Image (tube, rainbow, N blue to C red):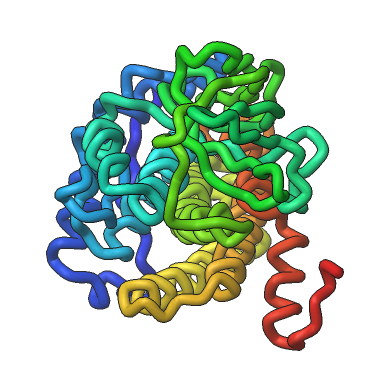
Length: 392
């Protein structure tokens, strides 16, 4: 069992920009990760199994919806606190962070933001505690980067809606108690529906054979004439802006989270470089290895400053979707580069489960794709700076 020796890296003293509360939150989550997750994560990833017992534990430490109001099951914390929690969880594993990210940003957030008061009271406190587990249904077999083209639809049957269609690549789906599903009505307008496990015609087959996010559970959502009560429609939003608003919240968390993967890879490579002896000296004494390490910590530091500033803007209500896209894309890119260089520094040991680097590397290949692909985020920035829409 691998010992978790991580201590953190802050080359530019960014901690000076954090509050005492921020640091206490980080310490709490880091201690939980070291005690409860680090000792088991490699085994679960190797077996491609989700440690489902952690759902309630994540609720207990406040990892679900930490920036939502406490009266609705959240933590009542600021956005930087949310980012810190996501970073500490992904420092362990992106699949674990995905579990929390989906529950908080893609299930709790839309119910809080777009739901009725009755829906908030019914679902959010239990979701916040991990007593209910949720998923988010947007991506479809034929519609990934173009969610507005979705085919999943519902019809008004008088006393209920009739839902048909399918979603895929859905984190948490096989174990979810509820799903926030986006579908088109008969007029072609997109709305959100809360679909509960047990509704006739609703199934959640598991996705098998993943080489990435192996400690996270993924599946499909299949709707075959599912009768959804009318009170399960999210009443306060319509159109593609509904799901996109959720994605911005999730992307913000990913921007912080991916840096966690990068930090763990850098930490591993730095320690290894001081211990591994070749040609009579530690490999960290060779110029090529120092170059790799110096570039790693430089890019990590730049990313840390970017997400901190983004967190300040988000706290002030000034962060734009385009700014969030830039940060998500940047964090994923630098994290993958750090992971690849760390893998090279570890040589053959880098591909084994004795070290976390290859697991992070495989996970990041998914993180750089979901919640908007690397290229889509580039086009979002391009559209923002030119005013010209490359999607049309």
